[in-house]
Image 1: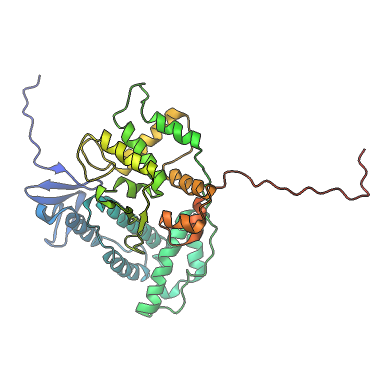
Image 2: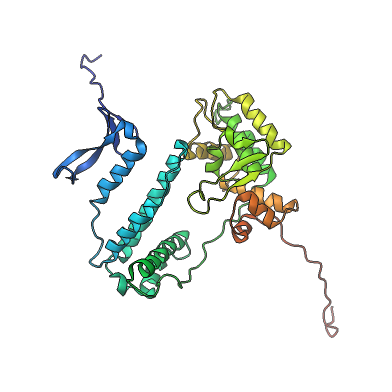
Length: 379
């Protein structure tokens, strides 16, 4: 054995997806290459962001501010400067969630906005805002023809140009508003009852033919996805205090910063049994309904991986956890519930979105039988 001393680390990587470390009571960012610190005027790799008592969100916010000062124009026009000003206002309107468990979802959303706007900068940065025509926007969006990304970029551009019109007086016409786009192909996958049950059973036994530690809890997660009609994030982070005598109160994460729609979902016999089962199998006291052995909520990637491996063991292909929500909506329609009723259960704001979730499970059967014209003779 080597006699060389092992040096104790003085910092630990604590913030997922960043290069932010904890060191000497502070959050510090360690850049891959030396960069300018605008506060000190020095070129360096290590940058103090804030104290530990300020919290993780403050550290990430300080990092965004630091990196934002390094953003270089993507072209010679003034488009990037105005877009950056609009971006700053847009991100300020995003209210961080009070529940720390929802913070990763909030930060992921912020990252997605930054990423989309960065791509828009790359595509239109050579223009002045007043020069951009619908043709220019169309040429940019055609790079993602038939894909959801084109609709995302058009939505951002349309809101930005509206701001340029009504708040800055830079232009009179929104060059993105009237552009038509090919609708992305809608997902039509429907999980049958047989497939649902096969995956559910496969959660209990691993590839090594031995019982899994997580199977029973993830079974309950699948059941709640189906019975409560909600998105995976909202089921993963659902707390026991949201279960009330009159039902389960849900404020979807996706809409809490926009429409703020809430829904109260009734508790039927099956849902009551699932809640009882969770309490029976729980190995740790937790405020979260679905939780790990340590009482913490599962990560999205972790729970997705467990489901995918179970689907593979069950021999069920091309299905995802998101398909369970569509199955619930489709089954509710089959049982006679109206689109308006299902819309409420899904916490949608319009029925058009709800109809996209209802998958037709069988082709309609025609009752029309006609006869050939009389002049036709059959041999």
